[in-house]
Image 1 (tube, one colour):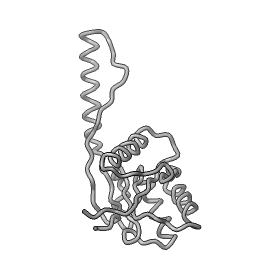
Image 2 (tube, one colour; image 1 turned 120 degrees about the horizontal axis):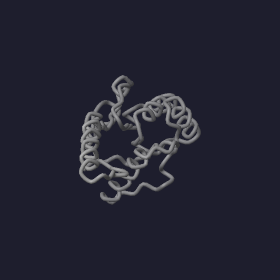
Image 3 (tube, one colour; image 1 turned 180 degrees about the horizontal axis):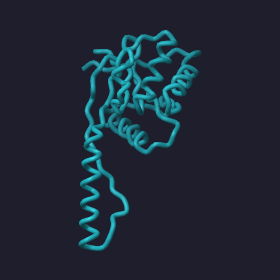
Length: 166
């Protein structure tokens, strides 16, 4: 099986729980497949396209990128990375592969278009309505409320042009 020689993780500086869960899930998958990603292979960047571009450009302008792939918390960060690596002379996906998350509308508009992980927003709405109905039903039957609820929603890989075929 062919694999990428080395991947790095671009994580948001902002405290966003879903981003932390994605990072933790990525580490868990790496561990499951007996792969390691040291903590210093996580780069912390701002969560806006412009600021993540500036952060990534600054990080790599004086030191070459020794990775063949970057996993990003979100398509916004991936779009900033795409621009930064282009400005630094790297070709996407020939030199570096990029994967985003959320399948935001701009993910298909970047050049090359971003490979991303789609989180089906409709499933969130359905889960929310189901939860509200269940809470109302419990309230009517038991006169109690659930203080918190965690729901997992499946994802789908959307293959576009920012990942090199190996």
